[in-house]
Image (cartoon, rainbow, N blue to C red; front, top):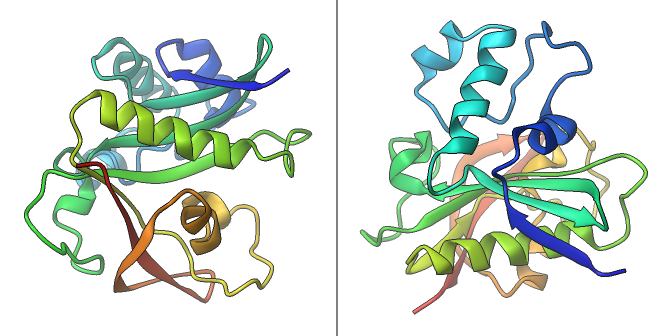
Length: 190
């Protein structure tokens, strides 16, 4: 059955992919780049999940989810860059003044990896951004040059994943993740 990608409007499905096993665990919930640092530090444990629950009720949704039949198998965070901390990030440059959208967290559930789901998720995120009027989509993946990347650090994607999705290198960054440099990759939608 083909993978279907849909807007992340069902909180239970978002929680299944990026939420903790214990509701009181203090995990990211994919908020680190989405909200100001001060708020990110203030939100703890269950408050983080409740914040994401509210995001799932907003339009546009906070990202997209991949489904294999009825099973949710992956997540991508995608939003206008202006609504994220990338808007003021000093390590990741702005190449122009376009109101681009950013993709920054790609997660595939264990047991579903190495099946092309991250590719479907990235394509779904691009389609979602396009449907909401984005002139371009950016990602900030690691440039691992084929070397193995720790799965917990691969959440930003790899340069190859973005290249396979039609993105082109737009700029180097001053950001490093797991000893790999991050690059700015962009797909023009105009």
